[in-house]
Amino acid sequence: MAQPASRADLINYCKRQLGAPVLEINVADEQIDDLVDDALQLFHERHFDGVVQTYLKYKITQEDIDRGRARGGSSTAGIVTTTASSDIDGASVTFSYEENSNYIQVPPAVIGINKVFRFDNSTISGGMFSLKYQLFLNDLYFFNSLEMLSYAMTKTYLSDIDFLLNTEKKIRFNQRQDRLYLDIDWGNVQKDEYIILDCWRLLDPNDFARVYNDSFLKRYLTALIKRQWGQNLIKFQGVKLPGGIELNGRQIYDDAERELDKIKEQMSNTYELPPLDMIG
Image (cartoon, rainbow, N blue to C red):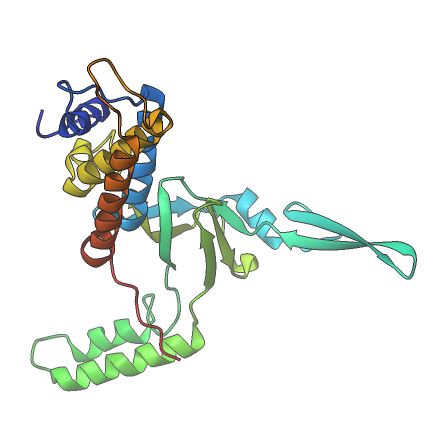
């Protein structure tokens, strides 16, 4: 079908684009399965439609707190030791490094994390006795009681104070680890508290079948199969078939390479989100 709705439909569509069933596509099913996985990986990592911004809520457990508060010595619940040996002045010396397992496990579908939201309990911007609450209670009890400019300037001033006194906590994340490291004071974290992850999660084509009908994915996978087809036929270069037909795998391979270069350039210019400028 012209609009693939499954993995098999996508593969059949790409084969038809290459000439099947009129021509025999000399690519094994196992090779095509690998190429589909490669195309989906690039689609998820580089295409802006391959991921979706979402918010995940996680409840802190006592085990998380114990690992985060581990300091070595008698508290080793979250300590990982790495050793390295070296010969110094003819003697073998062992160096031991301790690392705290201050991380939570993240689902493999999450490929990027923007920030972690915390419940704001500061006296400046959160809680019943905060300045924000008192401002609304005393100054905004009816409309037009306060000029919007004064209100905006007051809010900005309170935000500056909150930023200086309650700095954002540092986080570290790498999608190959599936771990979110929280560099926080775990002594101030309570059991059953929640944190909110502002993250990017890939679109699983098994749940969202329209991924298989993406125009970039169809063109890219077709070019990948074409290159693999040419790669398989290169070793038969110059071999004469009955009727004088000669296979030209090199030409198929070179054509596919040019198509892939053009598609990847279009990916960078059209489908990929531009990198953010860094100043300072």
